Length: 240
Image (cartoon, rainbow, N blue to C red; front, side):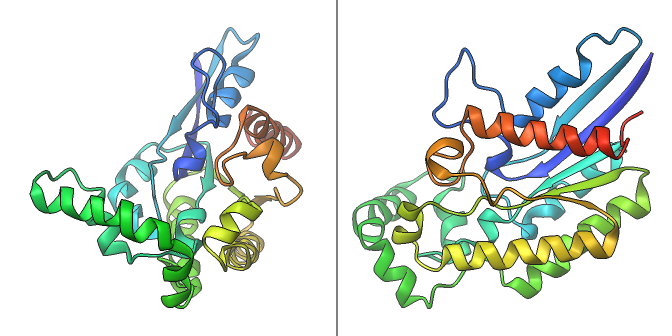
């Protein structure tokens, strides 16, 4: 039996469905796998989703062996929203808050973040100069490196997904994010052009219908992205 592999590298955007419904919710990776296997008897397409929450390009070292050793026929890269969003706290503090550690200090810091920092998020984002966790320079370097490693160590083709432009609510809460997302999307598109990778543009999607929490896909959003990925897959004959 012929087995083909799709590997997804991304953050929580590639995992979640908002609002979540236990009976119907599927992310676009699950939709792809179901669609590509319909009516097939002598071949299977497996989707291995390596995405994880708050993943940035800095975090790729955690899964590089898995990325390469899966030897995918297709790699879908869905990164950038965690990198480009402006932040009220530095990354080291966020890592500390969301670590698996327990104890009084962690509880105290989480309470401080919940009751003091979050209510003043907009002010603190501005106070920090609307800084993101990843600079555009580092993002370009690490994103390019990821594609290079895939193309030089596997036979897999690469499709890069654009970052969902934030809703007005998200932009109001963390100002400067819309500008950063648009900038990082231009970087992703230019990297694709330089490396013969495919770019899926989602700028026409609307937050109300396709990513109601301002970032993560709804069922409709996941279905739209799955459809566009299938168009690239079939149009470029990526999977045989």
